[in-house]
View (cartoon, rainbow, N blue to C red):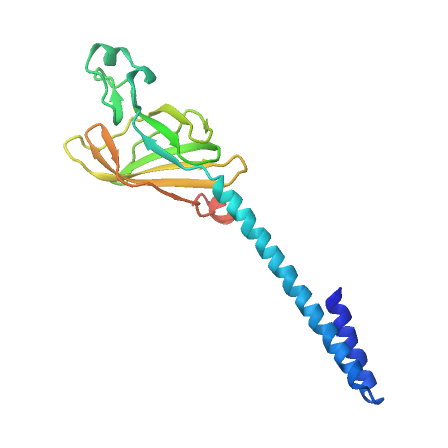
Amino acid sequence: MVLAVGIYALLALKVRWVHEITYGDAIVGIGTLLLALFTVYLGAETRASARAARRAVETSEEPFLIATPTPDWALMHLRDYEKCGEKPEFKIHRSVDREGESQAFVRLRLWNLGNGPAIATDVSITAEDVELLDALPQDYVLGPHGVADIEIPSYRWVNRNRSPRGSLEILYRHSSGRQYRTSSEIDIAGPFVLCRTYERARPVKRLWWTRWRGA
């Protein structure tokens, strides 16, 4: 509104210049325009400050999920073959019933290091271009600094005679709907998984036509 007034003042000055405009009129018109420009600048700065403040609040409330070992047998749902045999180690590990592999799953803890709530929707382990985990049986809700000791079905695994490297990824979202992904470089030694890195990122949004095509 102020900018429009300034432009109108300049147009009026242009018309009056032919009719012996005074220096005072010119000064008033230029001053009005400068005031309008300054008002526009202040508005832009205010909006930028508001966006920065909103981003700061979002950052302070971001979740950060990582995968760690379940630290206690009491927190594990031990199967009969585990109770009778050797107890699982306190590592991220795959447990399997040796008699036919009717039960096979990876046991781990999801730990939210962040200050915001998180809803875990997917966990994957990939090695040698093979996805080793099946789908999560459910979504897991973790409050700030919360944990969830979970089991994920796993009927595929890499060659036990090798120690390949791979990746572990956790997909999750804030209660506001913001999406996140934690990626870890891992070493796989037999049934055990060791996370060497933890990197959080915002997943790249897939375009609607790639989703439609199933890309």
